[in-house]
Image (cartoon, rainbow, N blue to C red):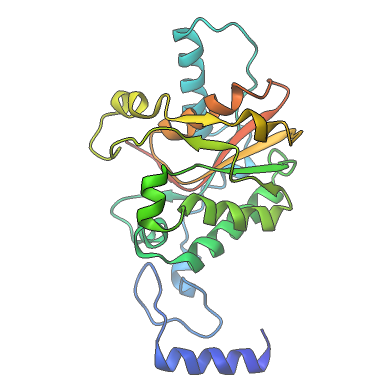
Length: 251
């Protein structure tokens, strides 16, 4: 940033002090979004370092169940999945996706999206991602909120990895009710056919590894629905992975 940058940032902090998103402590000039103490305790999953992990297992279980339900007969490669941190509704780190989704903190979404991208770029399983697809919002929600939080994360992820960003490949064809009050099975039913991949857009790309990006992986129902929509257009030679900021360990 340089001396001048630090000086200007210090002046700005005097007028409008920045606070740690987790603990509320006043941030120093060299701190961004989190203080050094909360950054030191950051609950990284390190799932990008492992080919198989609980998040990926949960996603693959849904893929297998869906294939059995529809009597689909095909080889399906194990789908990779990774999140930046463990999400706990009682911990202060929950404010990271909440600030982006509900309070318009675009800068934090970009910061943690880049961090997720850096972790993926260092992964032997995810470093070959060449197409980044954010989980879409229904147009009515997009109109009300003004932005798609998944697209903010995906854009920063794309910059960090060098993978191409495509915001038009997936569409949300129906508006679904809130997932927070539903049980796991109801959540799956709620989003099962909510997404559709655009065949015309898909023809513009020849990806080998697609990353579906979202803010939080809870049951995995939404991520799985996106996976299904993409798999309808891309053969199993194309990997489809799921990456999010937060991962809910129990739901």
